[in-house]
Length: 299
Image (cartoon, rainbow, N blue to C red; front, side):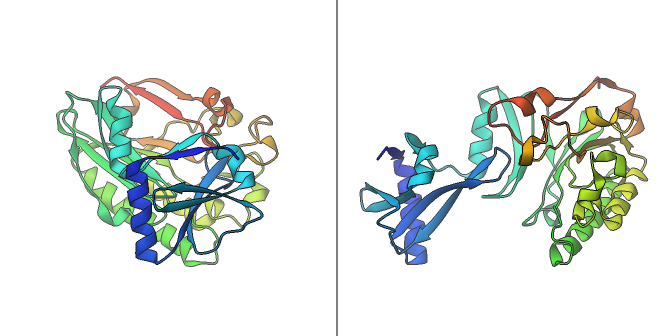
């Protein structure tokens, strides 16, 4: 049948959730999707499927795992950590301090630095919503504002999600407009925008996608018009792709899109030492569907 371990901290949290929802069992399931190719689904239930479910008992808690999911979960350990605690613990092992905006699902962003650097967090709370995250920090002695963002996806385009995407980008524009009066600006992250047709292997596939709509592109270029420079703009097409869908092995075919960016003030552009899309990480075992992007600034 296999095995799974659950820490006391996770057991206590699950029991708390079940009590709040007036449910009996806690299900763990694996399904396709997510940045690593599959994702875990946690759900409270009142019914056991006796033909498909493995049932694990922990104190007064019963965990349900279907046979297919057990293939991936076998011999795993489930723990519970506060989202920010998890991020901080990860970077602490590298002697880095961090500020983060996280969610229980969807996405999260963080900015980390050496412990001696003084970071002043500038929380732009109205930019943190269900499908978006923003992390803004100020390094005063460098006269630098760093905005790390996950932009709303916006799909489907005939729903409020697309409207919210555009409104969010307008809010971001206003915040950067204010910051630029005092600081050099580095805006980075997953923009969920394909700015130009050549930023996709096959733009026709995105005809009805929020990433390539004229309205999305308009808001992107409004950011550029704040005198911010898209530093990967002149990189050859295939070398600049940052996202490769898992379907039909798009990475192996180099059939990607460019949706991850560094936009920065002209002064910062003059300080670039290195710039690269780290495609080697996309070819690792169980990678994200995004490639990391690297910028090295001598400031």
